Length: 122
Image (cartoon, rainbow, N blue to C red):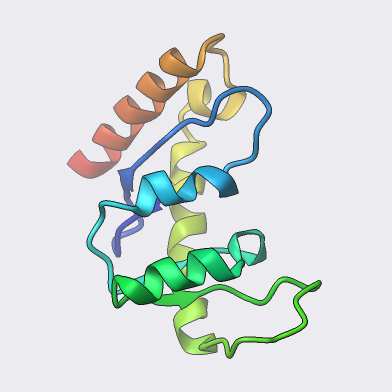
């Protein structure tokens, strides 16, 4: 999920099946204009950092513990990651989002989209 500065969702994608969300992040963030991209350590790998550098965006993720070459982390920017967590907290206040009642990814993404619209309208 891509989140804007006011802790509201901007874009969302649903990976298929039991795959993780980190491999699909390039599709989600690929077309978005961003100066700073924040994520957790699961998103830290060289190809992703190079893609963001080519877009002139600052990649702010902590280093993966298995990484040999450590990249510097701007702790002041990373502290703003709480906006992402606040966005997920707001979305989980919608019961259908939190409990994942929907059987298909298409329906679940529709429910998340409706919840995001409500958050934008507030």
